[in-house]
Length: 194
Length: 238
View (cartoon, rainbow over the protein chains, first blue to last red):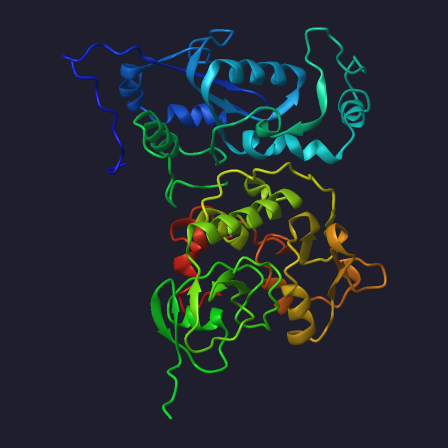
């Protein structure tokens, strides 16, 4: 994209500023937003000059430490999602909801007018064939919530980037605006709900 | 005695109007966009969506129903009014089932396009996640009640253009909903035909023609490249 904003490299003579820390995670999402984040392509090299990743699928760090920016993909559909989301809110100065699922529940929220037990029974017990006709009950499996919630119904969210997924250009525009201290803003071509 | 000029100002810009025009008609004719959902130039305005609310000499009024009068000072494109419009859109989004990635109207939808226009980044309010159901009993048309914003355009079109009275609004307040006039209450038993005006007039993805959903691909649709504030002023667009 020609009119892409760029991140200024820190001048060598200035005192070296500590790098920004960015954490990302996918709750009940499809990782499409993370894939789209990687669509910033080589611009990620500009990003890592001024930022480093904390908890993220990119680093495989399991728990979020103190961060400047947290990026959340996906809505809240189970107990683990709630814990992860609260951990991000507690550690991130700025929390960004990215993609339709985080903002309005998205595809998983289509189950919201159905009964969870009924869903599980139909999927795991009523289907023909297969040997284990019980709902999986391993203690390691997080329990499903009765409803899928957008993340702003659980914690305070500072910014929203809509899209399913938002394009790499939209994510880049938003991040560069935020990091360089401008009001993050998406113009018509970058602002999409689908 | 001198004649009073038929002019008014919108956001400080002086425009002329024809006597009998509403503020909305005068604005669109002069190339000034005012956000609207329930207003369609082909039908009698009824001022229900309130998106076109402007201030006329300091008072909030629906631009689609108020007559243009000489000397009116109108504010429309202001941060305060656009903020209120955004809240109205957010309430419409959370009240119904407006999941754009799963809707074949995406890109042609006026609700979505106005969301872009007003830079609605989040629905802000808690979602209702209503279960209003889908009626796909008609061979050529389906209706997803969850996407209905109750603009009444299909009611007007069916009554005034098609002469069939297929649709009506029933219930009050939050329980308001569109009902279908047929013995079973189903679209398949109604007099609706796929060529009816009522089918094409829906501004959102509630009433849809079957089997043409993705004939125009995402990315090439009405509001994919130009915002509704540009498209609405083009001659062949509503």
